[in-house]
Length: 324
Image 1 (spheres, rainbow, N blue to C red):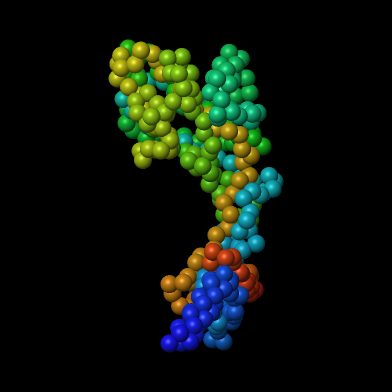
Image 2: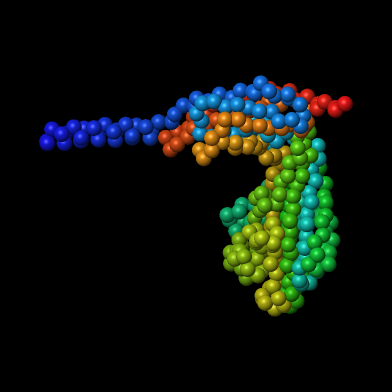
């Protein structure tokens, strides 16, 4: 009986050791991709790929603009590739006295600190006292209360370092201090690429309350009298207050840290296989003729590490034949 127990204990230890070793191994990928012999390679007709072997995940890059594997880690382009930069801002002036908003842009602003409230208040005061030197005031026409207005601005003079500043300063506290909802985006027209869009939610915006009655310059509680960046109503919500609700007229600034206007989104692939599904064939249809570099990225991964294998094909898609 003792001998039998020893054998069982030894076998159990071996099994446990084997399991531990297995869990610490990242299995190398062994999969292949081939083109189906029945493919015609005509625009508008599906191209089929066949798969063999074992792989956990596969990401597909079609080779079309915006979906090229070689640009998966590209987040900016040469400045000369940007042919135009246009900003669209949607404004909605809510309830309250008009004339409480100014909008400024700069190509020379060095940015706020973002963590030193006293320094940022001093920097903004210096800007104002200096007559907003280096800033250009944008034309802003308030529409009817609670109605959206849309205005466009050409940013060609702000390519190397763009900043935008919103100054929210209702005329007095004895009347309702106006609320503003603001949405915005910058569209970059790029040579040889789809347009790239930078929306206001991706800007690095710093809000500073200049009122001395507010101890914390970065004060924001998502309530009345504050600038909010996490509301559903709009990208930016400047939430006003009723008459005499505050002992001061709001004096708030929202300023973006400077960025060059050559930022782009990296090219994206499409996940066509994961651990939850099997994949023996995959079809994709190119709607336009052209030459495409098609890429399949296969990966295996666990907590011990990651392995990857890439397959690429050059696909020539011909114009679709006209039916007789």
